[in-house]
Length: 356
Image 1: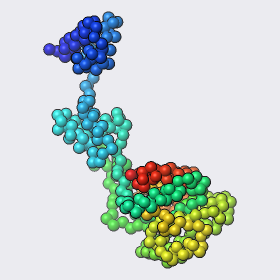
Image 2: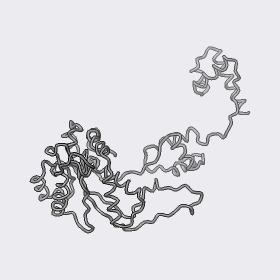
Image 3: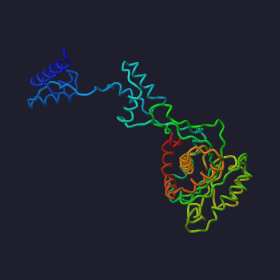
Image 4: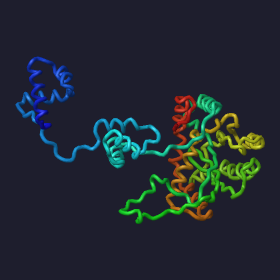
């Protein structure tokens, strides 16, 4: 029997059941069809329209409803590539391509794949310290957070390549795609910087081969680069010239738990020379998500990557300095303004990472 013949028989049976006094819900249950279909047939029947299913034009959909359910259940789970999903559908009797799955996910569902971020594992002590810090500062306003001077070190690498997922070239043949060179053990530079809601310190470039012990950290970074920024007097200028805060008598210096930062000599120097600072027992370990300067380093690295592969340390240093110098005050303002929300999420997640 033709599908259309089967359809008209089903429709006619449904109309007969309705004429006999059955409800639309009962008809749908008895015929194992949706109630919306019964309502549509009933409406056509009352208008005197044909109940014959019209032939569909175009190619029938490749993914069936059951296939879409299988794909939807993969959302948010790990190791769910489009190729694995296509293979799973093939095992279920529908051999589709991975590109078909990709189009469904991106165009119909509206999602895209992300690389999982690697973050340090939190110990129970880390979690408790993060909770203690969040509870202590849960009622701080944005104006309170504006008093903090955030500091950190960060590495930058020669021959750095962009994210492989984004570094794609559209071409007819693979031979038309230019190669990108890589180096097994590329040289790196390490820099130290400090930010507030309105200004930046100068970058301190750590010489290659120099270990950051407490003596170097105190004499070369804190006593020079940090204090130069703290003692600025100009009322305006660029982010590298203006005062770090409107009222420098209120600043709180922040540094993470690196050994050079928590050394007794460093803690003593900070106590003697700084207005206020968070001691090593106050800042929670393994908490880069609570330090907005970490996001600033990410912005700087994106700007550096836009310059293409850099092959000389001198060029890399100048590019990093230029990207640092070009940071807009609005970025600094927004990063610091995010602190109350960061604290709220840490409390909500019982000390876990913000972006877990």
